[in-house]
Length: 352
Ligand SMILES: *Cc1c(COP(=O)(O)O)cnc(C)c1O
Image (cartoon, rainbow, N blue to C red; front, side):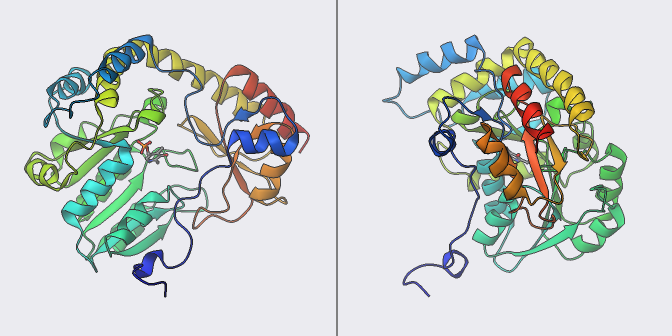
């Protein structure tokens, strides 16, 4: 055991990052590469968001407001009157929730295969993580999920799910909420690309949190701004567990302006939906129907890493899904990017 280091960090591991575009370009002697591994928005943030961020940078000598009212007003203008918390990305929001409710030894349930950060953050808190596998078609079975939640403190359900792309119907979420006693964190990082609206559930249940991020549809991945709809009664406790000044001044200003510019995100969403249909039709391998800005592709008999390496040699970075727990090792996840990136991917996958 390394000196000073906690048990959960003794072995190497943690979040698996995509290879950098620079690395791939260098390794393969390419001028430019298509960056389709991280589900980012290929378009820059809206002009209004950039202008607001630049202006805010000039006040970088000051701490942000303790309670940044403008961004909460912007959230309420978009979503109506809910209780919100904000954080340094949705990852920051997840950490706040974890710190607020999870004691060491508590059980945290995760519907898998899914985003790895729930398990990592739960382990950091000393929780016992229980993975509930999804069905072979990646749908979530309510009965199985409810069963696993017995005696748990907190549960995570990602919808639309990363990396499978499919969404859990509102009725299934309602069935789950009716059957559990613990807190449910619904991760809606990709909700803007779907037709589903889980927000009405916030009025019906007091054990539901809906997490959102501005990293995907809103083009602000580099700024790290996430938020969540939370039950009123939890708000003061979440606020007291949160890191002070968790969101920086530039991100606050840019996020507020980006929320006010809904036309910008409508454009990005229309782009994704158009290409999603084309990807579904033209990828010559089995794909999972997606409500998100990415698609899971079954590359068997290749492994995820083999397919990723072959595409990288053709200038396209996709995500090998090898590291997703609960997923067999023959999948890649491809994000919908700019037109040229998507064309390059379709040519690459056809020649795999
Ligand atoms: C990208 C992503 C997030 C994290 O978003 P940040 O706001 O960038 O921290 C959360 N959940 C899922 C499923 C994601 O894919």
